[in-house]
Image (cartoon, rainbow, N blue to C red; front, side):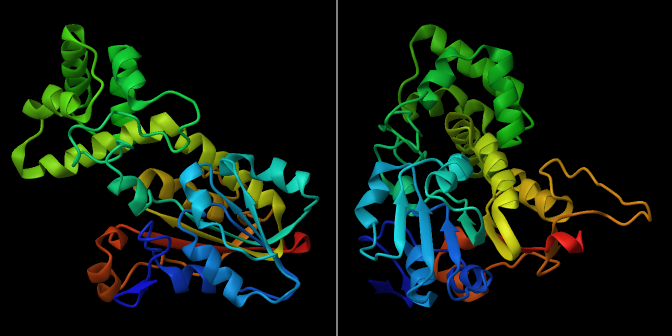
Length: 315
């Protein structure tokens, strides 16, 4: 299905961002093994499959049961119903020692934001505070809002939402939940609305919801583990193609590509040269052009970073 020349998969489940650029970055070759760790609507996986020969293989990950409706009927594809943090374990399970490329689109899918019952967007005030990517278990956003003590809640809002008034927001939430448990988006909005200046209300609300979503899904820990596993699994000349949407995840991706670790700790050899298993394919991130931004406003904050794993004798 196409709309405005942009691929939309599974009845509008998700519009892939930087589709051509991110798949071009993989430099797909015959007999290669590739991984799409964020299957979602299947847009990136379909594009990868369209460029693979009959001997190549693609492993696509997604922990959300809703994504399973988009599985592509192709014998070269193996769908893995799991969080991408377990990348290394699953590759071992399938007998894969090395991969030739990995693509990750770290944004929340259009499907999640537009599903009023998932609680990812503050547009749906009657929705439950859930925000779990995998609804089969784990804490919800309501559990965090109601059960974290004030200091821990403030830390989450500051670290993951980069909200400067995180302590005031946490205090307001704690005060509101003392009256009744906060279980819906409207109750959360009511608790913090006085602390949201009108001129940046939507932006700060988005940061608040981002912070809760990251905490609910342990996104930073999962990303760290996936990037470390990808670094180990990639063969020489293998490519890492990652699309990020906010500074926290972008910093982690930038660090692994420049230094080989997510903390950005520089390792130098005897001559003072930086040791890293990667070389950057592009020095600056690739961003969407004005045409894509107009077609798909959610692509405005996207940054694509591309790196190539060097052969062992090169680093």
